[in-house]
Structures are given as C-alpha cells and as structure tokens.
Image 1 (tube, rainbow, N blue to C red):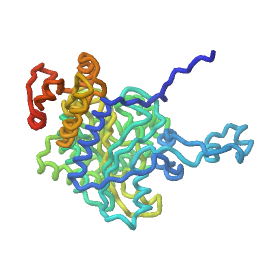
Image 2: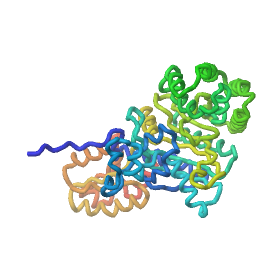
Image 3: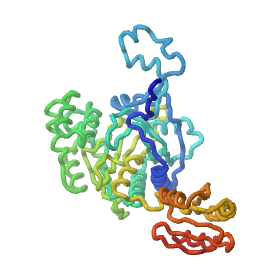
Image 4: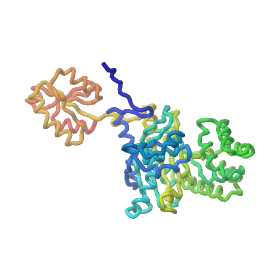
Length: 457
C-alpha cells in the first residue's frame, strides 16, 4: 500500500484559520477606514504581471527575488539545445517564462496608471490591499507571500502629499494602539553623499549596501561597498556621515555642511526641512526621526523615503515607502511624479498579537448562540434568530437539539459571549433565557429586550 503523503504548504507561506482571519480583517478594515477618510480610491491588479513589467524595476537583488511562472504547454519545445546544455539560466528563463507574481503593488500601479490614464482624474489617490510574493529566505517576520496595504498619490509634485502620508501613518497606528517611530530620509541626500565621498557613479551600490546596516552591521556594509568597487578612501569618508547624531534639526545642519557643494544634496535637505516644519504645526503624536542611514533598496525612489518601526517589538519595518519621480516613464508616460507608502499587514498582525492589542470586538465573530432542547424549540427560534440578525448582531442557531453540554462547549470553543437558552417554558412564555458566558448571569427577556441588551453590551 502506497504511503500517504502528509499535506503541507510552501515555506514562507501561512494558513489562516477563522480566528486569525477575524484579526486580519480587523487590520484591513482599520487601515482601509483611514485611507477612505483621506479620499483615496481602491483598485486591484492581477496577481501575475508580464515579466517585462517587473524586471529591472527593483534592482539586481530584487530581480532575483521575483517568482517566475513557466509558460503553458511544452515550454521547452522552442528552447535552443545549447542554452539547456550550458545551463544558462538567465537567458533560459527569458525563453520559458513570460509572466511572474507581482513583487510589490507599486510597479503594477504605475503600469495601471499608464494603461488607464484617460480614465483617471489627476492627482490620482489610490489604495490597494492585495498579496505580493518574494522568493526571499523565510525567517521570523519575513514571508514569501504577504499582504501589502498601499496608498499612493500620483500626478503631483507637492510635498504636502508626503505630509499627508505621515498623517495617515500617525492615524493608523493610533487606531491600533502601537507605539512606532517613523524614520525619514531623502534619496537626493544619498546622491549628495555619493558625490561628497567621490563616488557619484556608485550611488545605487551605496544605497543598497547601507540599507542593510541594521541587518548586517557596519563592517559587512563596508565589505559589500568594497566588493562593489568603492575606493577605501570613499568608504572612510562615509563613516562619519553614517554616525551623525543629534535631533532632526541638528542632523540636517550637519549634513547640510557636509553637502554644501552638492546641489542635489541641498535639494533633498530643503525638502526635508519643508516636511519637518509643516509636520511640527500639526501636533502629531508619532515619533519622527531623520535617519541618514535609511536608504530603501528599491531603485525607483527619488525623493523622501520612509520606514516605520514598532517600538515595543523586535521586528523589521512594518511600513515603508517614498517619492518616485518618473516610475510611469518606463511605461511611456514620463514626467509624472508620485509618492506612496505600504503597510505590511502580516507584520502588523504579529505586532498586535505579541502586544495583545486586538480589541475584543475584533476577535469575536458570533455574539449570540441559540441553544435548544428539541426540534419544536428549534423551529420557534428561527424567527428570533432572523430578528437578531436583522438588527445587525451576528447570531447562530445550533443546528441539532443535542445535549446541552455539547452546545455550551461549542459556544465556549467559539468564544461566543452570549447564549440564548430555549426550552418548552421559553416557547410558551415567548421569553428567552439569555446567559452571559463570562459571568454566568442569566435573565429572562423578550426578543426585543435581548436585542437592546446586546447592542449595549
């Protein structure tokens, strides 16, 4: 007899049961409610995109993390035998795969804007809540399939858009009750730093390397920079810049002095000064820190960049984003600037779980369960169940008039806070024995009284 293979799921993915989905929907609904308050409109794009849309948009390392999909049918039939024999995976992939799973929501959004530009009102404010996939090494807080909650404004150069995104971050995490710090930098400052250390042509290599500073440490960052061809003198000039200290104003003053001869660097500094001065007037509760080591490894960022870290949980960034000046240009629509941020729903889930911050209402699905002693009582309950649901209260009828212990165990297992016990006496008097499962308190009520009580408790 053949051995039955135990079912499993791919590494870096997760199943979510009913109790987990209640929590996830709380996250999605909370974020979505803030997005809507600021006037953003929802869109969705396909899980798969043409590889020509995705490749080259995330840098060399990002391209390696793309999940590629084999062409349908006999995908090897038209492949040159030499490619197979030489194991030329790069060129072979181009022959056997035309599509891939989306790496993020931003590049597909840029493609969407170009493709539907005649139907959109600019500036276009969109939000999108969908899964993305990355062929990354799975580890705590890092998954191969995860949800992003993106919000973007495209078709406007105004720094007020950056300010609005910071307000959104503030509002979302206030609603969640998570203490966070928003770290901000500017890619123009990073370009100025590359100029100042004598390596303007290595700006992308520098940003990719220093973006890993928290993960691999300064020594490994320096080694990677050397491996990328930076001169030792340039690496040495970079060290004091990466260790600048003080408050935001002091750090801006210090980096301004370092970049006094860099026009692009000064532009980035002025942009941050505008953002900081505007934010100060709003009295937001969120902690905002200028972090000159923040780089964001994606190639398409050109201006302000953001990352959000939870202060009470050891985990990677839970929100990130930035300004991109010409992402649509790669699809033939140049000169359209945008800025956006992405909330990592899966990491937010883990943070809320570790800090036990889910409200009780977010972990309950059913509020009232009707339990009965017989089929006649069941039939009598049907109209009452319908009345409770019509009042907007989640309600169930246990499907079998089985032993009361079994029905009560079901209510406990589902964390249902209230049970309506219906027997022959309740049917005759048209009253219901409503039991509070937490306190054990029980009272006889009419169905209208039950509905009013549940609405207030």
